[in-house]
Length: 296
Image (tube, rainbow, N blue to C red):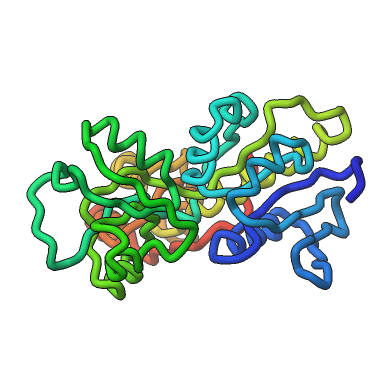
């Protein structure tokens, strides 16, 4: 890897890895993988990707081996709490709106509980001992933390623990292991972060372009392009109905003096009830389209 190329550390497998690579491809990077598939090089831009274990990503940024990283916020928080010096080494640039999950306390389904005090003097298995320790201290709970590097969900079934503290996405893994979610401690998603060290002028230019493209892709994902016909005198009501919209483009309709064509970009979710409200003020021929790219 050339020192003149920007290096990004990504998780080497899993949904977060796939979504990270897809995000960068949507930013226009043409990625070529190595034989091992642990290294990607962009053929059309000076950027390289290194695919590693998720908990190694912050270390690679801290040591200056990579310039940027994409990782779950839960991993970054755990790492910075293990070594408080880490927290001054990183700058979270932005959340990326994928890899959403939560760190939760879960217990066997047949276990009865009333409050979080149920955990008092219990054994809790986790891969995130520091975040769990913080939570227990905050709740004034004394419990035994059982650190496990993987497959935390099997611990209660093996009588290794009375509860677990682990990542939950859909809840399917919990159900498969006869567990139920008791308490959500931390909401997490993928974040884009960097070292607090300054880039040299060449890397700064590459970084600035990449950041702008990522922001544009995410803005496009959050936006919809909406087209419809509407009575000219209903435009003010339509602006109130559509969430997060900019000023609409109003175009005349041939053969109609009292109706116009409305084009608008909405930066929030457009649900069925929003479309039904538009109909109540006279909108018709409503079309909602995804936005592929969007730049201010």
